[in-house]
Length: 488
Length: 147
Image (cartoon, rainbow over all chains, first blue to last red):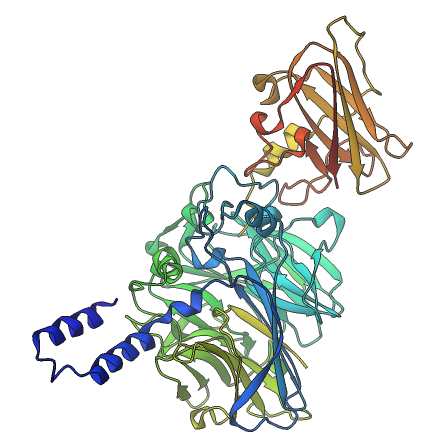
């Protein structure tokens, strides 16, 4: 029972029965339900067989045809021990399949070594990002701890479940059955392949993986085969969840959350050193030894938007930036506890500008934001729009709305679902044959806390404030995922 | 999540180098016998096996026996005969490309298969003596997966 409900009940007890009506009690209970975001981090006990989602609002947009694959943790708690950090749940791949206006949902756990071992023990024992694990763990290589729970990329008839410290996990795109770990070349087996690959205009896919003050820069061909992988030194051992890229440059944002020891869980290695500031390393894609550094004041972040370059060489990209590392250290634990208050302020959307003369600045907006995403037709190229989830505030973790920032006008076009929803990352889905940036749909699920179900929403990218043009509702709730990708 | 394992240590411990063909000591009356059969994922190269008779030796000392299983030549088994009764633990790696060493990726993680007796798996490193320890008295046989 939350404090508000307790105080209401205590107050009600002090009043006469004639005043404290059953309706009032029910209304208070409903308010509690609206605040109970814990469904967003609930456990799934089994895979989800394909099922129809029912259109409950609007009309299915003509031409919106494809699959939204999404990944995220979906099993945290077991009788013999539980994950204590949001990033350590077992990965579950979700597929929202839209065809001829009909939507189906299916989901399947990544069949990892970690999940197999922990299922056998019925205990979470594997050390992870923030979960200590215990002596029953079986971790002979990083991929034995791979939760395959963070993001997804499409690769032919497969989707690859991505984590941060190990290999991609290939799954069948139709059945979501696990096929196995992906080794891009024998001598690169087990190298970390992070969760945020960047898609270049020429079809090349870039990605990173880090250990300490080293990063591997992956370059994949459009067919997902390996082009090259090269290790480069970093100026510091920052925690890096994401990177970004322009058409010509890789951009690594080295925040002052820095590895200082070799301990587990992984997060225990890092210390917040704001006096170090944030370093931004710009690396030439054509020659990874060519790099320059820019400095900004300290901020913490997980996620960046695609970067672009102006004709004069000025580089710009967006970031969901926080003041410090409280969320990763404490907030993400509270999310798994399913109760309590996430400390600190939510991340806000900001635009970083790296001027050609080496100066850097950062313009932070008033918009609470996570998961910044842009138009995939413009990845690495000049763009105006960034979609992000919105509405998170101190006292209510996780997003409640969706917004599009237009960097050219400075305007934000936002829609708020309210506290009854936990809104998940939105992807940009270009309309068939269209080229203008706003000629796209934004597709995002939410967990409808009041109804206790997962919904899928489609918005017009240029008319977000009008609300979803279509909403489909499942008959079950899946916990909130992290990242998705659209396959048209 | 970056490289989780202190991998260089693992690679060093497993790197037994080029070894002579199946080394066997003469049997003694109280001898035990440990036969390790390998299920491989590649048909090339050789499996290098080292056997230890104490936790101290297993943790960085000298092996009591070693063997080379010629996988390319069709062998799948290492047999250690004439072992005094006691506890033993084996480490093995499959030198798939036959270059005489355990290959690692650029971050120092092994890229060739390895295994420990009992099919033991470590916890953020090589399997511990406690997990890999085998009591040898008489004939003991194990099948180890190395792929």
